[in-house]
Length: 99
Image (cartoon, rainbow, N blue to C red; front, top):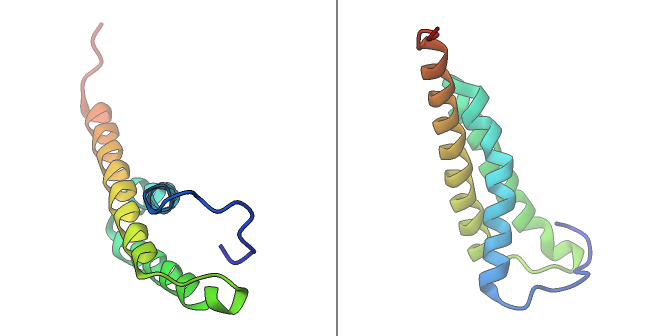
């Protein structure tokens, strides 16, 4: 994120997809484990993404608002998947065991 660009991605679409994927992976555990503290974990991720974009010019990287938007989309995707898995696991624990 702050190092030199080793191999630039060929198009904006693949760059945006990379941002979505990385932040989805970062946000997934928040949806799965944090429960009521979810908003604080997500606020931390939003701040992390924002700070990274703001300081990138100091490391010869470009700061782009579209990257921040892609990060937010990834957070929504990852958190949603985590919450869905959390709900499915809770339902599974409550189901009676068939014999």
